[in-house]
Image 1 (cartoon, chains in turn cyan, blue):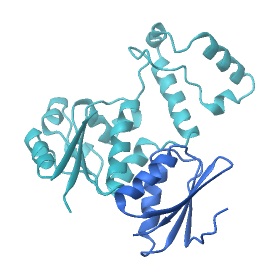
Image 2 (image 1 turned 45 degrees about the vertical axis):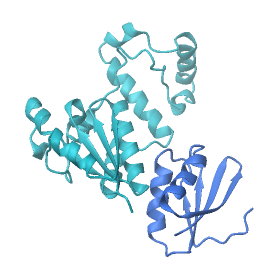
Image 3 (image 1 turned 180 degrees about the horizontal axis):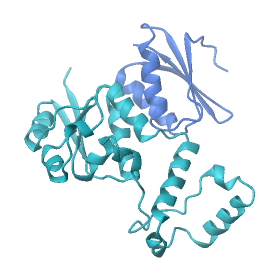
Length: 182
Length: 78
């Protein structure tokens, strides 16, 4: 059978942007496609042992962000009514609110709660599922050096650090290659 | 109600994309060829995703039942 390969480039280090590469990779691998994720720039934070625990959602410069209150919060008496009122007034958090200290953490906490309420896997879970499904997780050598990250600071089970040539070669070795840039 | 007897049942109720598909893949690994896996899901996305998974992997989607907000898939392992 012709080899099919999916190579995903993960460049973003926010909580919301960490999801698409991991969801696509774990799913592609379970569909029988050889899959790799190349983590570069801020995407390296997704596989960084410490930083992966603190991935955040940025309300600033994110006008599409909804005013998120998880279903469990909305069902809480009192708090729920207040949340409902805020949602009715603001379709999303006003951009100005993003500069309030603690706002990013608050929005991140709400988003994490919403993921949980909806049965969406955590980043840690998805990384484990990727590894179980034999997804190759490749950290980018150049950006590791740029940010001063050591290989040991990353989670276990990664491929050795690689560069652009390693990545392109991995893709083109396949009969049917596919690249997704995130 | 389907008349198919499943050899194994996987309940993914409450879980969302991509977990139902990933768990289905795992559950099928524990079966032998020709055996039937019953997958229960509450994720509306699985209605399209489970057939797509079967199409790619060669397992046969024998029957799909929709009842009371649940999707039940019967998959015969290839």
